[in-house]
Image 1 (cartoon, protein in one colour):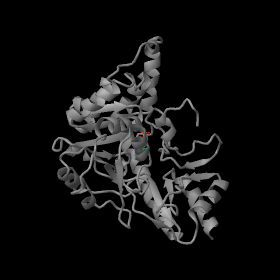
Image 2 (cartoon, protein in one colour; image 1 turned 90 degrees about the vertical axis):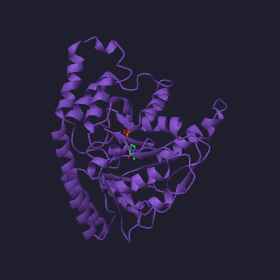
Image 3 (cartoon, protein in one colour; image 1 turned 180 degrees about the horizontal axis):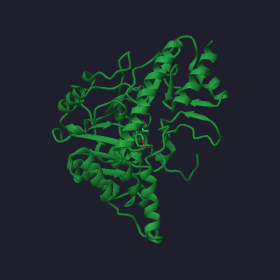
Image 4 (spheres, protein in one colour; image 1 turned 90 degrees about the horizontal axis):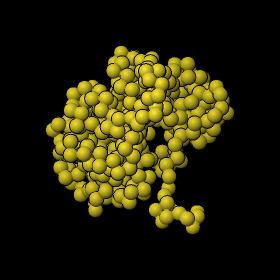
Length: 356
Ligand SMILES: *Cc1c(COP(=O)(O)O)cnc(C)c1O
């Protein structure tokens, strides 16, 4: 607290990201980063940008990142005018809350979901109402029908549960709420979901958000984007151009384009993560864990006899870090990022010993 703080700052409850410990040799399964390096073409593109003209960094980057918008548009068969890009999808989401979700009626999102959403509500003064997930932690689309709202947002697959909602359910929600923006945060969709981007030409109220942080192994580069009707994108551009004209630097633009264009590398990494996830789920079930069905690059698990906080602590003592949320309904769960096969073997060995 300080007398220099504004009332808004006083009232904020900031998001707390998963730890990025500065300790060597940790097995880091706490923030859903990809265990595999990005495409070598990303590094080559960044090198080329630096080598091409040594003085290029003195110049501002393209404020519109047209190269990246064109690349995203080609990937998803939309026009570049339907694409918004930002410094990580967190920034894209922040602009969405400001531009498209701030209305008189409260917005809706699940009670268990990405914990940044209520933080943006606090920052921008957006009212919200949380909608409880079903007992099996799935989203029931009927809960989002016939309820007046100022917008709807949730991740698909949901975080931190990993559960996927079928595309027809998303369509049902978009159809039932023609006067609200429906935001689908597809941070994990490449690990087993089907993207709602294919619906944006049919629903002018549907906005789909992606990140290159997870499936493209570029959490360190900070690139995210949104795809939707041109009017939604124009609203986001208005906010962006009132906030920061150059959210993506030169290296992020060329690196992200190279990542999007290396389809082979992308598909190999996703397939590897999916195979490891399925093997890990089987192994943990054998140790007595309940494992929610996951379409993401993490699993959400609980042990019927072991306290989740204590399990997380015991793992940490063995240099393995996972995420534990001390939140209602999920405080007995651990969210475990899918690592390499070797990471997951170490995790299973540690948990076998801890729970023995
Ligand atoms: C990781 C994550 C993001 C943020 O991604 P960045 O692009 O790294 O900012 C957004 N939404 C969800 C649900 C996530 O898990």
